[in-house]
Length: 487
Image (cartoon, rainbow, N blue to C red; front, top):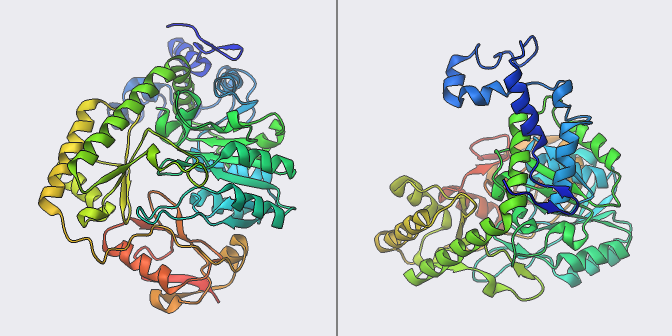
């Protein structure tokens, strides 16, 4: 394997993986957990996952370090990750990017603090506000009239929010949104720092920004203070594995303490080694592989747009402000002009063509193109979309277009979540204050969050999304026939 130095460290190392390989060769007799004892106690699991996999599903021990207080191989893996991502510190996260986002917000905020953020955030951000008691100051994004999607934060919107809330402790930015849209992150970082605030970035869908060329700027390169990076999405590691990155102004010891409030004390070595190996892979080959990903997505957009009816949108949307940049690896397709909601095309692709895409909503779908894709799969997707248009195209009149509705925040998420509440039939909740979440998942952006006023427009949206087959989650009532509201 070729050696590569990013910054100052040799990125050809993978210390957790190397330690596990050495441990496996030692044939240590296990009188510790996990109870399957290298798979012998659960032969069906071993057959399903493989002896090599379950053989390294081990517990923390001196030779393998401890995720809660790393001093050897895990610490070395974190140093290599920080070096590869251009961060001052990196933390291995085994609770998914949800855990990374929550740790980031909990590090910056305490009870009563204000934090400036776009409303089209993942639910993990608002969950963190429920936990710590911080108060959101929402910058409501503009919506693209044709596509119905929310855009990035405009510079003047952020400047206005900072001026009106000078005691806010941080500004949080999506980099990028699920659809690939980026705000002017560098300018927002500079505004936040000038006001004495931290800048945090949710980079669940931006891992490749650190390694590819011709992509939007990464959070660390823009000078952000913290970033939650979903390595398992575009980076190739196992599901539920992520990095939390921090800049030089953030106290690493305090971040570790915050992480340890909620993250497991039994960190999975399968997840940690996958982060280690995937970081090495991207550090050594990321430039090459993400150039291929970018070319595949560009090819797919051209072919889908040639079908007619669909609109696979891309960098042509960039306007220098609310769409400051666009992630060219994102294959987002607008479907309403063929008379089908994105979720309807999603269902047809899965049920009739055995193609599983990332998500579909009211007007769009997202096919995730990443390091494991080949042109054959892209061509199969294009052919299926062409046939769906031919067989299922309808009159698009009367279809709902917007996936985002500006909320009215009445009380803080924490206050609403823990308040006395009552359960009412859906249509009887109009005008009440919601005390739980309602969202389509994916993408996990709340339609309603605790503390927000329920309007007729929102109720219409929920019923329409249910009727066309969106996967709805959040409320106590799994059928979403009722909602909990403040008493």
